[in-house]
Image 1 (cartoon, one colour):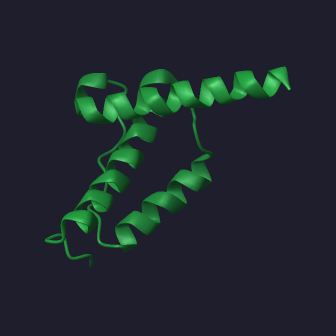
Image 2 (cartoon, rainbow, N blue to C red):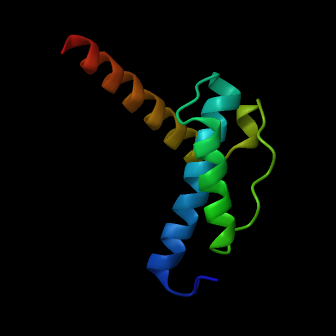
Length: 90
């Protein structure tokens, strides 16, 4: 289990959880799958194996996600969209 007293370790553990929750938000609230289901399941299993708390079941209600998670989700969705647009131009 990670030493959450070390600020950098805590930051990364928090980010891992926020990333997983942002992927849930994109999937359930925006109907946007940013990673395949099996990739998400593997990421979640690795997070829990490292000592992370199990994630709540995904919700289609944006208010069930903290603002920081919603912002990260929107950032990831916009980045994915922009990347797709650039690849169409090439």
